[in-house]
Length: 351
Ligand code: TXA
Ligand code: MG
Image (cartoon, rainbow, N blue to C red):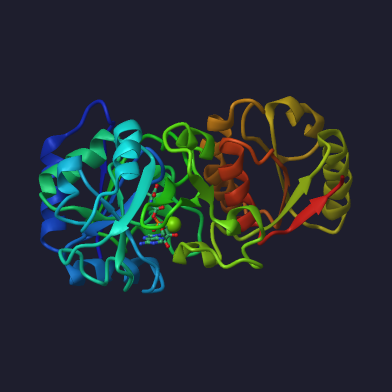
């Protein structure tokens, strides 16, 4: 398949091109588009045949449900059977934005979209290009992250092209995703509500709106021990080609360990990538592939650089990535959730 690539910025939308891509969605095609979290690989959420193409393009298991993207809260009532009070409060506060809510689905949603479940995940993105495509398509758009299954989610136009060129009709975008991690998912069909996937909107943020909400147990524990409630969270995820080792515990000790280990591995002819923070970057100056994700306190920056950096190491054909670790509080919980999954829980604890 020939993929058309449209470059545009959020503050300078080319509506002629948006209309062309939106028309492709209506006709059953696939369009990769930017959102504020990660790029999405979209199709008409109401059409089973269109949605099946998403699973095929990604190589995604068909029991892994998709998130339906809408352009306003007005689109919601026809897609769900019930909107609980707490969900209304969350939408009021966080929509449009990086929060996905799970509802009981209406008959308008085909079972292909919901992965056979009777619930459906819905999100109203804040990215203006995403909003324009949904608006012009005139249908809600089902969109998983734009990456082949198991790989790192696409957060830049280049990542999407590297991974999906030839597999979709259109790829649209230019800027990097702002948050760089997928949306926070809250299941509003259970009582109390459960966070199934942590994101930029944190447990603390959500508790400030509705206090009775908890984390799915698999987020805090190793998900090889507790099965996650979101079907997609059980699959191997966010995996670069390289082996990742996370060095946790005291940061000074971690730096010392990483330097020693990297030197040893280089002697064994391994190509080593090091993932660190601005504050420790200089300590690794003798190594060739070192990327700082940002300042320790700048969690948003660290989050937005994570997948991009894993992709960079893939492009450099690094064998092993040695990564510093982060506290699992606030956005750090989401950062470590993705990092731990990409490493397959390969954690070296120096405490
Ligand atoms: O930020 C995001 O959410 C991005 C952008 C494109 O919007 N999308 C995204 O989609 O991350 P995806 O398909 O990569 O991840 C969706 C996750 C999967 O783990 C899936 O199993 C879970 O949401 N999910 C979807 N519907 C669900 C449902 N009804 N019940 C439980 N989990 C659900
Ligand atoms: Mg994904």
